[in-house]
Length: 332
Image (cartoon, rainbow, N blue to C red):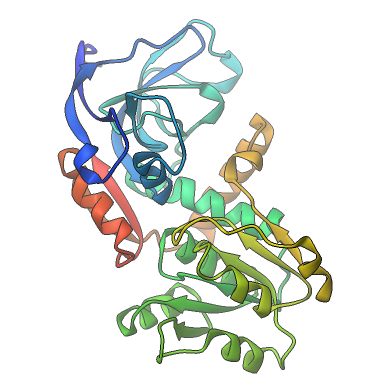
């Protein structure tokens, strides 16, 4: 392998704000600790959560290199990395780790896995965080059964598209919401059985849910929008159903009275992926399940665009516009 340089390109923020705070600059290549893996990045995932750290919705110490996932090859292994993980220099891997918007990332090996044969580095990165999020939502936030009616908000978004495909593979029936006419066919291709344009005067989500379910409501609502849709999600869910509120695209859900849930014995979950893959056993279980679905179920890894790392501001602007369909990737 080529020698590891002293400096690398990275995207760092020193204060919170709009895309103008994103700094594409030279910083030192991280030296991996004894218990870390140094990855030379090939692809980096852009996720909505990255904008939360940039704007300050999620506080974090500064300066900070943004990013939560990437794929590439192992450039160096710390001396204490467990041999049982089977890692070697040059292995193709994908990871979940902070400080990903860079040419190199020092990672905890606990959240690094080898990319299997049959899955490209590009697809592994595009699939990993959003695919694992969707998979754990339908397995743990609400255990979806074949025949269940479900509601997926933002059905052509990153996680939404994965949810529709996984729910289809499980035999569930899905109502998907989209923001424009141009996204309807894409949502259906992804697996939504019924698609509603969720804009004033164009579609009535609650009425559609009632019509499809004989007024019973859906077994689960997967709501990544947050503040603007939460109350409606409670209306759409069936008796003993679950509202999984997993994102804040429109802002954080406001406090509400827990007694409101008693009307239908509704369960509300505010899940995060990392609490479902906390142990190495959980992480490997869902990673293997994801690879198997990608290979066996012919899951479509939809990529919106691959941006040069220096164009990160454009990527953030695009993902915040809610006009994207599929995964946004950065290329160092």
